[in-house]
Image (cartoon, rainbow, N blue to C red; front, side):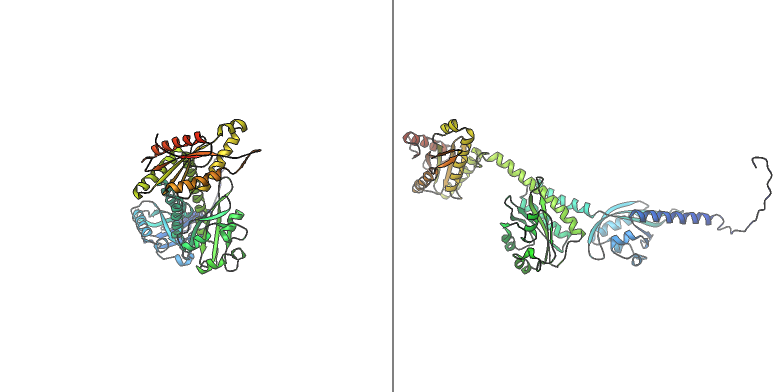
Length: 486
């Protein structure tokens, strides 16, 4: 010993076969190491499967079995392909993975799996070869990760973003979204309803619902008992009705739904950043049931993409409003007015029909501004704009040119029609208006030019109508005059 002390002992020798003299401890250590590894994998929740060189299952943990929807016992000794392949794409990707592994390479891919109950999910497959000491492949270790939510978001976002980049109408974008969700969940019928600022519902998309049903929803008020969608919009929270035939929320609407075989409906509100509900996203079911995890994932993604598309649509509308419409009155501005009027002229020329251009100038507007202030002057302009809108037809055009000058374009009209219209206009404008603390009677001088008599383009027609307006103003405030060449 190191201290120099002599120690006596007895050594007993036990014969050990040469084949196991060194391998037994090594095998025991390896078994312990494997048990520790498997315990760690199972504790982590990773879905693990070990196959032999022929891809038959030799070991599968509970997480893998749960992901596939099969019992562990029934998976053993069966080809792993039976649990991973659900279509031609997954078949191709699986074969590619096996080929790479047999070449000794690790391989990763995404597969669309079908669970035993028919539910489909996306999984990330990570497979690696396990080699024997001689370098041959003994096993294949496969780890599956459920990436359904990520994949669904990726696919749906791609569909929506591509449509938005192409500047497709909002209704078209929502229809694409509904169709894609229905493709992923064939047992559900998707719809999107827009909610206006008055709480009224308007269909944006419902490609698998009859047009007559969607029309019946247009203008439907939200409320405490307005089906799933109207109630969701009213409450600002998700509403699930698993039995339309019995639920009191559907009392006023159940007959239509049941006639179409719709027995359940789950509706989720889409909240704007300012908190208001701007839409509802709904899934209808033909059975009395609620959503499963896949439906919940789809709706969560769908409502997010709905908001994205609606906000983009609102931004486009706001930009368009600023570019082409007068901020004070909401009427088309000079640019939009001239553009649309020029299009009308082309149509009238093709039809050989008449058209009138009316140049409207408020009388004594400067005095109102000076006496009452610009705020009252702005209110006066808004009142005039609203009254002009009230007297025209849907086919007519009203715009604000500048300041207190407005222009009306009346297609398909004769001189007698214009004269009758001018009398209605004068009567409408002359109704007393309350502005601030003051009541005043409005009047305007109007000049009229006619197509094709007074010009063939909008520039000349507008100039001649302006000339006629000044002729009317010289005669008397509140009068009108047709253009007559000097």
